[in-house]
Image (cartoon, rainbow, N blue to C red; front, side):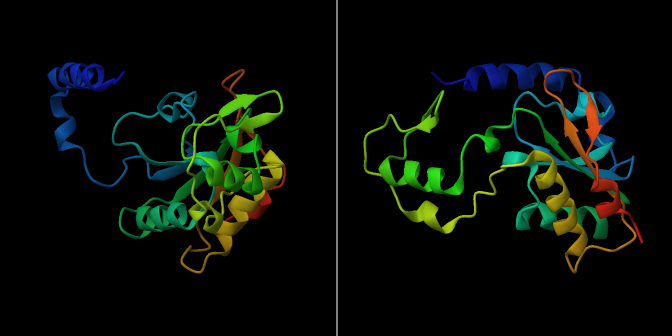
Length: 192
């Protein structure tokens, strides 16, 4: 069952109260960007106190510092003036529940949605699958705090990232709503 009509109805209501938002400036008013996970339990506007126009929010599976995430951060800084960045992973992240090998195996069997059981994800679909997934680094997470630090370091080391941008590393607790600083992330992301 599609949610298309629900989305379009919600959009009509949003348009009715849109007001002056069409006049917001292109650069983010508060001058920062957040790289966070696509998990539906995370609402960066709420946990970081954002309104439309305040900050750039870049989302992907696991909040990983992929080439595309770094591309967006560089554009955010170079063309739109952000001066500070946050990498925010979260507790109970689905990217911790599988490995690159498991993902490749699931895709090779079927392209249908897998199920999650006590032993992890398993395939419930009919074939055929595809081996195209063998060429993607899925950027899975085996140690959340370590992954935050690695992502901050990967961004910091990138040759297109200026050394004067502070990069903060946090974990959002889905159980409490708290942002917890990851030990070691401050040093890894310190501006120079």
